[in-house]
Length: 475
Image 1 (cartoon, one colour):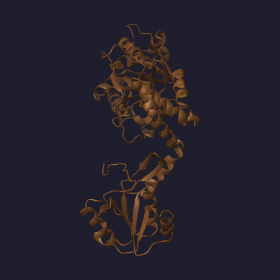
Image 2: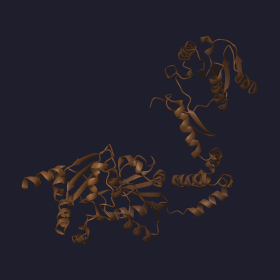
Image 3: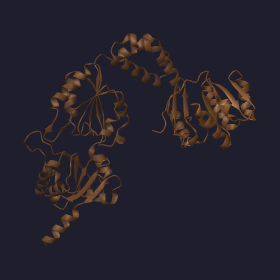
Image 4: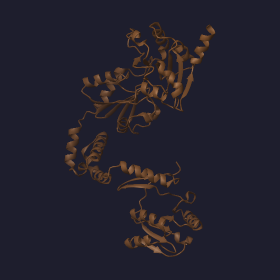
């Protein structure tokens, strides 16, 4: 970070602008908005500058002289806005010798501060800076943000200032104060009339909306990349008090969680259960009963092999309110990032999502139904079951030459896609040293990855050549 973004109290401070043209006039307007006392120094001034000075006679003084270093003394801030590089350099040197902030327009090397593009919803200010590299880009970004932000943010902030001591007096717990503030802000943004409502009516509306019991949000984190989070998921992560997350949630996504939230790892891996499901269920209830916003954050979609249904049943039995926020499931995300269409008119007319994990020793998978042509099979949690998947499908009639894709750490910068044949799936997993999390896709659509692979950060390994060489040598 080359610049530290700060806001400075400028009311009544003496500032010097060296220059009297169009650029100087723009800087003058900015400083007057901040209620500064401005002296402008230039041999001549534009009509615009003179008009502004006349209108703000109490705040602007015009001095029709050339610059000399001695005049810098006692100014809080200096702006050089002339078209004379020699004069601008003189201003910069003189100001820096006296440790006075100086901005030389369009010259980063001579400046100790830069003026950002500002979105003004006073007292709310949003500054956009390109570190002086491209003021035009900063302005363009400001314009886009302007369209997104409600016009009433200034009055909303003024009302929050008025409400702050009343909120403090009304609520004892920090969580309750924060929750009321979040409710008020969200309500006021959607309805201007909320800002002007009486304090007691606001508190009554809030109490009707929320009880002492908190709420659990079952949120899908998607297949790995933070940019694949839904907008709603991101909003909920920003207001969470507690987040229970599993092993498939990436660090990139954890960085999106509100900084002061409590993070609880309840992850599991095959045969390595760090936290039992029963304890996770109880943690959700315990935290919600403290009146907190609780997020159960799961990789992929929580309702597809994420045991989301079990957790909702437990919450229902304990009368805890909940909401489900779907995520992009691993099958869709990983296949898309690998250039594999899960359906294709020429190759596959149906999809089966199958979990290779079994709750007990019994095998309840209908392998005969799965081993049919013209369909796509997606196996979740199947990395350790590669041999069984291969043997069962082949035994039930699926050709051992069927193309298979194993996708490791899909949608992330570490993604690898290994193409193999069904008969060679176990050896491909072993020889390629594939690590969890990984997804197995079986079906002829996987062969399209060689043509449609687009994700530049992902590696594509076509191990089918090894299979072909072994088959040829056997002949």
